[in-house]
Image (tube, rainbow, N blue to C red; front, side, top):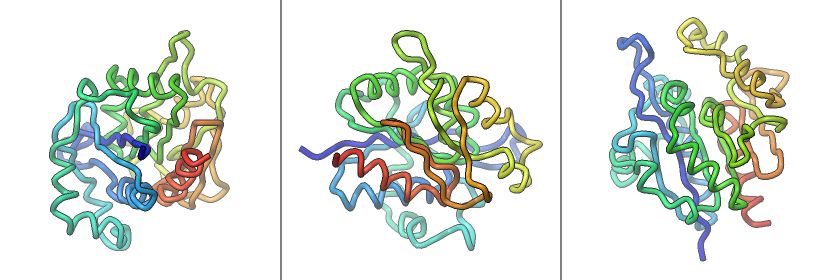
Length: 229
């Protein structure tokens, strides 16, 4: 039976300032999707509220719009998936071997406090599955508690978009919180690459995280390795 992977993407279309659009960073989804598709895994998209997921405009421009993301944009079938994502209450967590949280700044608003996302993540983790995230996707793990009440990330090695990268991207002042600092405050053992914006993946057992958009493919490959083990 084919392994099944659940992708989590945002519903948020703008920063606190409505005039500043954001959304899913498409290549973080497309790169992982391509890796998993090559292994024959079944994949499904879910978002905190279900329905459409907006796209981050910056990720759709040269040089950030690469061949993988461009192929997704030019595929009507895949684009349709972004307009009809599943709600958490429509998902049977027991049917999935892995969950993969994508990024884009929108997730900073709708991922952390979604009880539905937390319940599915907890079920997959406690069922022996893989929990993974790339870039801002790790915001979806900030408040996830296990059945014993402990935070999933406490005492575990993890990475995600760093505060240095926020500053260099020129958006730090618009952030609702410092995700790196919040992870550390929850007891996570945060790690990042020496240089910003380069691929960096951290694996702690069945927890796999990538630091930034450039890390999506390597993160998915690591998840695939664990699924084949």
